[in-house]
Length: 163
Image (cartoon, rainbow, N blue to C red; front, side, top):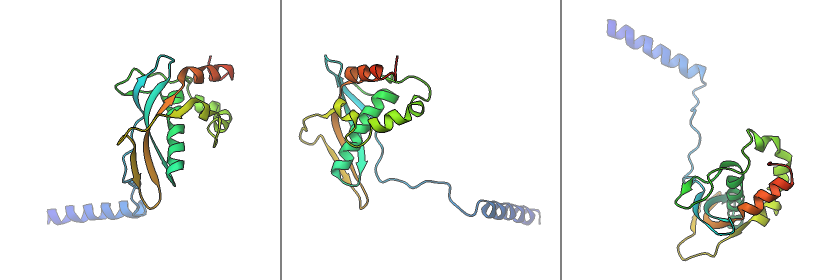
């Protein structure tokens, strides 16, 4: 009898919880592809960083453009911590909420064919070095790019974004 009462109470609690949450699942959709961190491949004498980066888009060109943006964004706001190279782990913008504070500047900076394109270039493709994945709705590309960190830093200083 005591076991039956316990089961009834547990069932009532479960039913109440499901009704209160609308029987909805709190989990988000799962992508079939893992999002990879921006990875350092090395640093050149001019201060440029060679990075391995992932981009996703509706087609290959959009995915590659997004990968370029992701690389520059990581250098500016996140720093590069993954990989075996000697990339600077410190981001260029260290100010708290700097991305939000200068939102208008960075929206135009990262616009299609925006200023960011001057500071990133794709490295020559080596056989089997580009990862290509595709679903019905999007394409993923993992490519190697070079980001001109020193020039990018000078640009952000000249524009008053960093000190």
